Amino acid sequence: MCFTNNVIEQRANKISEEIRKRTIYQFIKAVSSSGSSPFNTKVILKDSHGVLYSVETNLNGLRFATGELTYKAYKQIQMKETVQGFGSFMVIISSFLIMMWALARYMGI
Image (cartoon, rainbow, N blue to C red; front, side, top):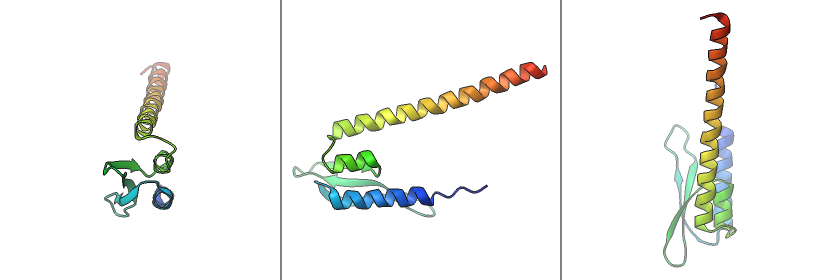
């Protein structure tokens, strides 16, 4: 079974374009992924004091670019989502391991 990431690419590029149109900062450049079909993974923005900000092309990045979030709040939300994702992954893996162990005990292996 082949999984296409075309939807992910289109979403990232669409949000990158939204950031470009709606940002309150100066849009410097979009950073593309390296692969067979590159898509925008990050956007570099610059404020009026010359400070550069690197934000991912997701809804939180768009919220920062439009001024809804500070950079500190943006980074905190990104970290929280990363920890939650890792935690969810660990729970799923642990559940599979417990089920495999229980099945092995049941089968007498």
